[in-house]
Length: 233
Ligand code: C5P
Image (cartoon, rainbow, N blue to C red; front, side, top):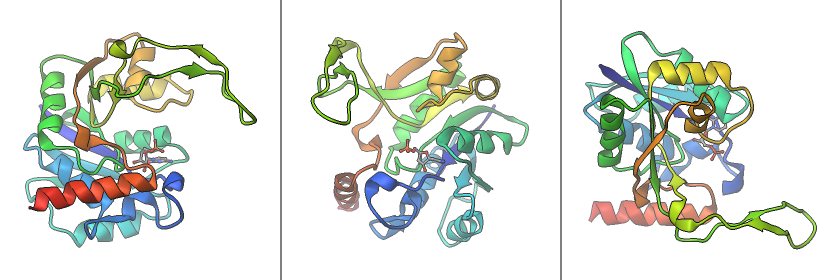
């Protein structure tokens, strides 16, 4: 029962502002992608990490992995990504050798997820769940609106906050289920678990972690640097 982690890292990171592709930007002097790879390899259960690189950047990412210290017990593969996140994840899944029956999918943009969260997701899959997502309750109340570019947006509804969760990664899957989800669902989704939901299969939530936040906007870089500085104390 071996576990592999697929890390989609082919996004441009437009919302972060101008600069290098997001995964190659540094936190505490180390590229975000390296943090994310180390976060997956930190789990003793993970024996393979597949990095999905920007299509024109696979060689650069390989060089980057070679230049950093990574656990010897873990294997690493780099494959070129696709147009959107889903295509990139599919490219990673297609590159998986036989023998890995648990697969994690982890955003390079969540470089600081603690190993306990990774292990909790893997354990839930090994205990029989076909799809597992780490998630946290929300601080903000959420409203569904009619999106408008030009003026106030009408509110359609307010889902009860206590029933909502903000979903993180790594998301964990029984491999066959993840493969089927990616073969079956074609419309655009923002996470892999929702594809499994569309198959009518159960997805479960385990507790996420505040340090598993996604580095999306410039303020997130400030927070990530602060978390790293606190860890180094
Ligand atoms: O855009 P978003 O923040 O949802 O991206 C989540 C993850 O998906 C990031 O790690 C990003 O690098 C990755 N991605 C990708 N291929 C794309 C677009 C995004 O691997 N074409």
